[in-house]
Image 1 (spheres, rainbow over the protein chains, first blue to last red):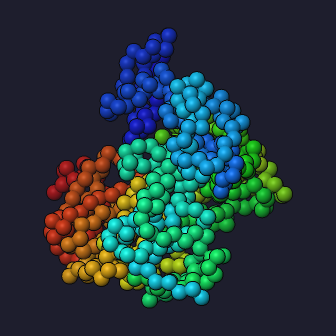
Image 2 (cartoon, rainbow over the protein chains, first blue to last red):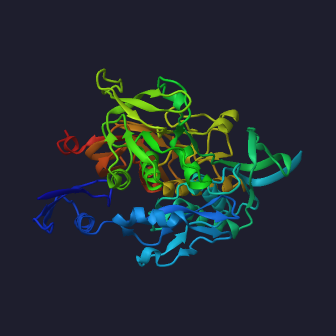
Image 3 (cartoon, rainbow over the protein chains, first blue to last red):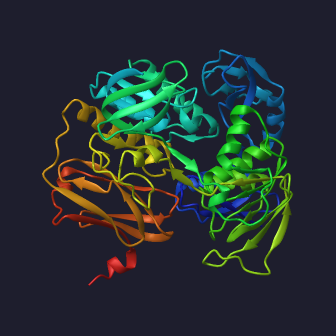
Length: 118
Length: 421
């Protein structure tokens, strides 16, 4: 079986081809023009991760929302659950950039942090 | 009317204005003032809550607000004066600025030098001439971004996005994460205009269909938009009859280009380049009106904020030097010309003794090419695309070798050069 992953490490956007066995294990990696492309494609196949950036409600700020992010990428399949978890959050101003809004967010070992002062 | 004087006045407190003000201050300008019409500094970065900013500048993937906050914090450590909620009405060639705000009323500011850093605006529906009625629910992508990320309103539940530039792609993901359904992203070009990374992480991650070589040919609905008709386009972007397809939606986002905001510049008589829609500038990033400088998206639309900061630092520091009487005119100026597959180059004029960084865009994508800077430099590029700005640094040593009064930048195919006569 074959899987094509578009590398996003640089603008060249190599189409990296993974040859997979029936269990989805990687047999070969081709099509990448550099080593980073191989690392990326393997990671993207085995455990894709994304950084979540969104907002939470804030009371007493100049705006009704505070932008936040996970301080490390989280598993891609957790994005929807993470969005639901942030929907109910509300914090109070003042908040500083980098302040932890939720520690060990969804037990993923990452923190949800503020990305600006408000 | 309140009357102030300043060495350097920066118009606009976005990324360009922040970096320019800091640089002018660091150059030794005594009084630097930033005029910002919003209630806070940071400009458009404050609504760009996604990450990916500052890879070059800070070697980190920051969000827009984080990138802005870093500069705002640096500015706070200086005595640079910031006037918020202040709208500039007019600039004169003698560098007098008329502005207004609610607490001080009318202001007259005499400036030693002015830095234009007003940024850009989105192209609107009117510029696209899409037939159909005029219902609610048609937004420019950046306006929708502000509603969602700053004001806390969702513009709709079922969206179609016209334009696959980065703002359009980012908004497709944002709408999806916030619970809306993005039915399609429609792009007239035969390839996605934005970064591949955004195509993957904003569209493919959420199975959002991307319709290439297509456009919106009709908007349906009276009170509220009820759907759009899309169609394939030929190479001239003319719709191909028989390829129409109806898509139901309650929202249409337009991500169809940015236009530098130059009303103030034009008012003072600054010469505007019809290609960039921004001022013509020289190696000091000075416009055709002495003492008035320009940087950031008001000069030409950038794709990386890192480049905006870098350019603005140069503009700010030259403005500081001008105000202090330390900016000397060069003996010789050279015109920079856009050659084969180059849409534009900024700055438009350079001198032989000032190191300079040229920013340029190509007209069409090409693979395996050389970027040729006159006879001075030939840089190998694996790929060039209109959406990715190119930059080249030139040292005085290189510049000294220029013969004649023009420098032409061109893209040439590698084979042609290799087999050259």
